[in-house]
Image 1 (cartoon, rainbow, N blue to C red):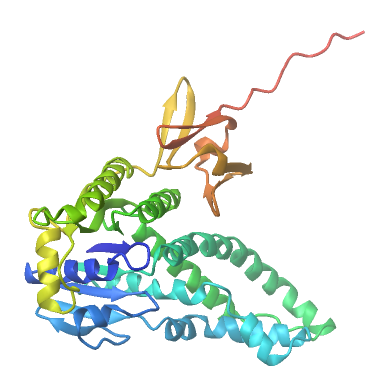
Image 2: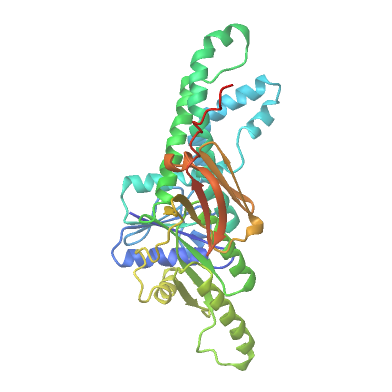
Length: 399
C-alpha cells in the first residue's frame, strides 16, 4: 500500500492537490482513501461532499475521511489519563486542572496518525492520500512519533520493573496511587503503535511527502526549511507541487513583472529540494471545488506522471566507510551551520536543526567509536566515528 502525505503553508492549495490526486488515483482503478488530519477540515469542502470520522464513499473507488482527533485521543489515552488525573489529584492538584494537565501538548495530533497505521495494516486500499495540516503543525505532528516513542520505549520497561518491585512495599507506607498493570499495558500498546506508525512513515517504498508551494518568495523559503526538517526525521520528499503558476496563455503586459518573479521562484524550487521533481499546476480561472474541477487540476498535475510511483529516491540517513573510519551521513538540504548543533550521550546522538531535535540510537558499530569530527557538506551532515584508542599495555619501569 502506498501512502502520500501532502503538506504546505496554509493557503497554497495542499487540500486541493491531495483531493485531486485521490480522485485521479481512483479513476485509474486504485482503491483509494483520502484522509484529512487538518483541524480546518477543508477536505469535505474541496470534494463538495460531507465526510465523517470513518471512511465515507465519495466516488467509485474513492473514500474520504476527516479524522476526529479528540475521539482518537479518548480511545487511546483514556486509561493512562485516568491514572495521571488520580496521581495529580493525590498531589494536591484540583480535579479540573488535573484533567487539563493530563493531556500533553500535541497528543491530539499524534493520535490522528494512528489511523494511518490502521489503514495500512487493514490493506483495504491500494493508496492512502493524507491531507496534512499546514507545515508548522505537520512538522510537530511528524516529529512526535519519534520523540514520544523514544520516551515511552525507555521509561516503560524501567517503570514496569520498578512498579512490580516496589508496589507491595510502597502500598504499606504511602497512599500515592501506583499504576495498575492495565495502565502499564496501555503504555506498552501506545509505544508499539508509535513504533509501527514511524516505521510506515519513514519507509521510502511505502510513504512519500509531497510539498505544495506557490511561486512566492516566503512560501518557497518555508518549504525549503520544511524539507530540511523532514529529512532530519527520516521522511522522504519525492516531489514538489508548484501551484498557481501563471499560464503561458496570459500575454497581457500587465502580468510581465509577475511572470518574471514567478520564473525566479521556479528556478529556486528546481534547485532547492535535492533533485525531487517539480510538478506544476497552472493558475485556474476559478477555485477547484467539486470533483469535476479537481479532475482538471489532476490532469494538469499528473498529465504524464504515474502518481502512485515513488517519484524520487533520496537517502536521508546512511552509514559509509571513509579512510578507515565510519561516517554517519544525514541529509539536511538547505541547512546552515549556524542553526545546527549535535551532542552525544552514550549510544545516542542528538542532532538539532533550528527548533527541532532528533535523537538517534547509534548502531553498535558506531556506538563503539568516538566522534572524531563533523561537517556540513553538500547538503549533508557527516559525523565521523573513529575506532576507540586501544588501552596502553606498556608498563612503567620498576625501581
